[in-house]
Image (cartoon, rainbow over all chains, first blue to last red; front, side, top):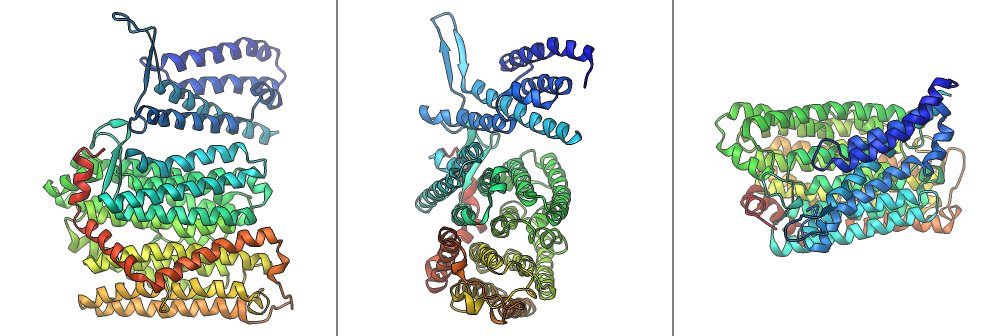
Length: 140
Length: 499
């Protein structure tokens, strides 16, 4: 689509959407957000880019095929579940690491739940983009 | 301990990821074989544990039952997972020769592994809603496999397949919702207790019939089977083999599980329906097969007919009949998958599966003829192959309770099965090829030939072993049936805080 307004808007929007998607992903553990919604927002960024500049460009911007993104995400999600094995827990038991924790401070909590969320993020991003790219290219 | 239950699900998923990322390379198919081998080993390990320690259960994420998702394996689940592992490995090896590069690029091996994960998950879960999730995993991946390649017939079959399965899914979900409304739980062991104590028996019977419908579509029971013959003859042969072996059996397994563990409050009503359905399924399936002229269509209708036998075992609901159902289930998966694999080689040699257009295989490829005869005779119930014992137990079970008519139907359907098998034998193997072609096995490249014949021979060997040494298998089925009819161990393992 050759629209100057859309092109100019895209420059702003895509960067914003991508940053916002990561923000949503990270904030999701205790507040609304998370991997699924983050992945959707991230996918929206690429979809806007694809509409403005064509799927060819969008695929280049993504660098890896979207199907592979989704499958790697699935692998990461599974890995998050399997991490419990290293600590002798049952499958999918959340593992927590508190960085810089002291007697009074809790420190920065990192968990296998976050890893799982990142997996979900990639699965959603990858599968939405697989669908939309295929539909966009089918329309041409 | 809890990991042994999760591994048959986790390994195929990881294999799917690796196989997908390597789908452009020749190694992709080998990853699938390796993953299937590991799944089989994990399944065997699970079987050893279940044999030694009885029913085992594990809670995902350490959420205690009945709130979290429980994985549980009794003898029936364990043997189903093992047989899934065996079939999975056989088909993965067969796919080395059967699946062309175009299909590999589209992600055949990844879809196949996800399907195996879904099947194992359905066999191992102890939670009704989780069972629904596994059904969806299977539905999505099997639809992908069904239409892979995208010929007109495949899309046609695929649409029918998905449309009917979606109806089944909706009924299933509605049933789950109603059941939760009545009992307040979806953990199967907890449900068994809740249904016993509930005073709304009438409503529960209605819900039971909804589940019967939902699983009946999945298992291809009369009168809900027509998606199966419409779809199973269209995809690649490895795909139809794994579908024929495993997919409908998940429906049968779910029926056996739900109608022994949970819905045993009104056997006079529910199991009488099942009995009639079983008889009609057997007869209609075998008559449908008699009218067909295509190798795979005949086999597809026979799946329907054989499902009837398994449901017959469940419906008679005597200890011996359940033994027969379990035995039949295991025997059938091996035999049916194998027949489809043979059909694939026949197609490769003759260029078609329409029986009118092929022939001469007995003369040109006698080895294949022998490998066909073993599962075919077993399916028809020739002694001493595995099918004979399966049918014998079921017929004896019906004679024991003086159900002469049912025994007669079971035997008559067996006879008609022989008719279909001899039709395939006469047309594809015995009569000369209509165009004078004499396709020899040597025409297939050596590596592909090994990939074709090793799984076929392996499964045929298994059929023969079950046939000649049925005792340990029958004893095993007896133990499994005892566990099914007296679910106290199962309930204790799940709710007793099993680790």
